Image (cartoon, rainbow, N blue to C red; front, side, top):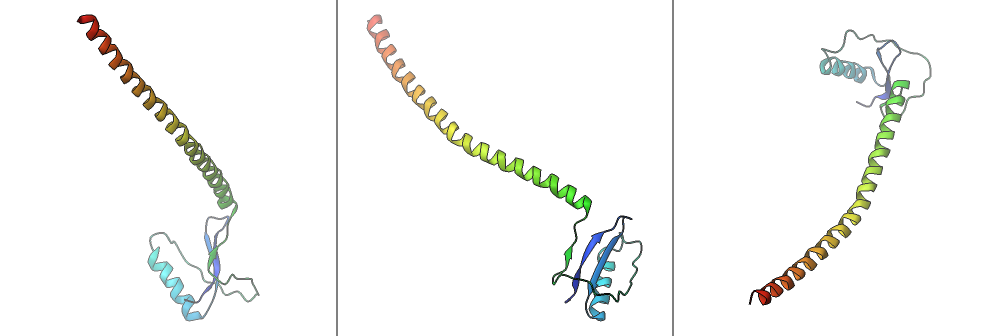
Length: 125
C-alpha cells in the first residue's frame, strides 16, 4: 500500500497508528483494519497531523514499557533454554561414555558366565 508509519499501544488501552501515504491508500488501509478486526474495534478516529514526524520507511511497531517487560522475560527464558540445550549437549557425551561402559560390563559378564558354565560342567562331570 506504500504506507509508512508505526503502531503502538497507548496508556489508555487504545491502539494508535501513525501513518503517511496517499489518501486513497490510507483509506484502504483503515478499511482493511475495520474488515479484519471488526469484532475487536469499538471505534476508529482519523486525525490529520500537520507536523513533521519521523516515520520509518517500513511500517513497524513501537515497543511500550509492557512490551519491554515481556521482552526481558522472554530473553531470560531464551537464555535458560540455551543453557539447557548446552547442558543436554554435554550430557550426550557423558551418556555415550556410560553406554560404552555398560556395554563393556555386559561383555565382561558374558565372558564370566561362559567361564562359570565351563567350571560347572567340569564339576558336574
